[in-house]
Length: 339
Length: 267
Ligand SMILES: Nc1ncnc2c1ncn2[C@@H]1O[C@H](COP(=O)(O)OP(=O)(O)OP(=O)(O)O)[C@@H](O)[C@H]1O
Ligand SMILES: [Mg+2]
Image (cartoon, rainbow over all chains, first blue to last red; front, side, top):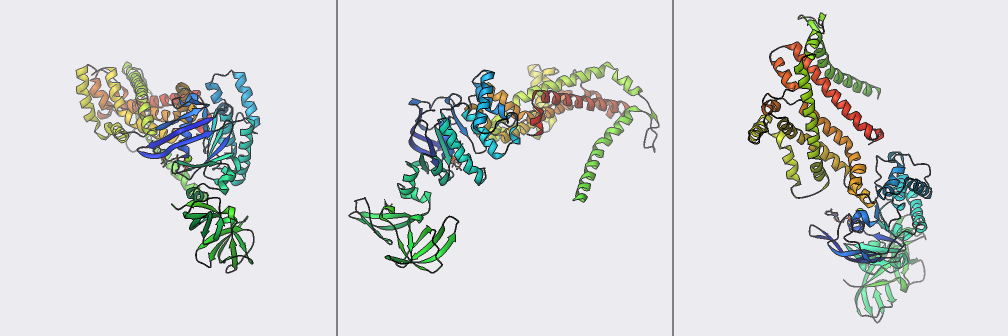
């Protein structure tokens, strides 16, 4: 368990910049999620931390000491991949014992530790199974056990649940969070699933086009995306071009008091679920143009009377063609520079 | 559904008969004393041919030399091919395609051409007519096949398993012996089998490079076939087939002994 610090870490493949000077401080014992679209360089970053690849610039520190030149073998940073990567020719016990054997621990210690960790991952008595005889979820838990039994300085999870079905994914999320707390592991979880990042992590780092655009708590990230790019990536956001003047932002939805004082062209952002639709009492009038039922929410596309469209998600039921008043609280309006 | 299974069975049996029937006629030839024209089976059997030839010292010499050459060729081929196949199968680098093509060269050019070239070279360095010289030529012809097989096996295995082992703290030796080797073992067995059989059945290369000083089973067999001595040719053929089979069965048994059977059954 260590504090992990990235200082100006960059990686290029054949002159193509994949990671662009990342700075990140991961606290000891923290579970941080690395969230980004496919191809944004998430796996690349994990490989750099684990020493499977070397950064083209910058350095990586564990507990303040530079490990950039330390070999994979001595770095004690372990990636658990999506396809679990168990050794197919070794039994569960031999798989888990692999790292302990590499450290030349005595046989009795190895046996005890294997039994203990199998209890922790709730698969006692499976010592002699071969990987092909395990289910997907069981394989993933053995892969976690194999890494955790070594008490690594950092545990790196690369989309570990994306091969599992929805229900199993939910229980594995809970399981990993509790495992991480019990063992007090520093943990980086790579995912492209926003909900997974929000549910599991203390902080979420958003990686877009090789840059860390925002590193924040799930609440802050959701309520206050730092820029338009992050808001767009997190999705379910309406954007309105408008004007800032004396701390008031005016756009097609109306005027909003903001904590920002500058005067300029700007873009306002409101999440779908922060848009209120009412039948009576309001200023901005619109008409329900489209409706999609999605279980927890109903998504509406609303055409504004003054021109333009927006999306809203809520539980109330409207029918196509209904006239509605559209509004949004001041604090739900995020305003970004017009660029 | 049932009809489909019958067809499959029919095809399989036909294939089996096609494979086994030449062997049967070889066996009958080897043991026949009289086999007049219209008869399907010999009219008189004898073990004379077998006894006479099996006891000849030349056969013992030929079998020993053949086995020794095949074993040495197999070892040399695997040692040469392993690092190259691993590099070509796992890593992207400049000249990777060139390496793949180069490794295939000896089998794309007619064998006699390659051998003549090598012969000239071996005379100069004094390897013509030696065991080492012959092993080298055999290896040249075994490498392309062994390389292909192992390269695909490495491609399928991928880098991840070795990387995982390193992250768990294993040193190069442990990564190799506990992960890489067991994972590519089925491919190694296939490559070894191929090399062994290729060396064991070499005729022209042994003939040219060995310069008549090394006697192998094919060298013993071919003159009899060409001379029309069918009984002798059959006996030698049988010896040839069964020695090769026995050696291969032994090889597999040894490998299975060292690596867990289950892995081969459930790769
Ligand atoms: N060894 C390599 N050589 C060249 N390019 C590479 C290499 N590894 C990764 N890349 C490139 O780097 C970019 C980022 O890849 P990476 O695997 O880190 O993405 P990711 O964020 O993990 O995506 P995903 O969510 O699909 O797993 C991709 O464009 C990929 O093509
Ligand atoms: Mg990835």
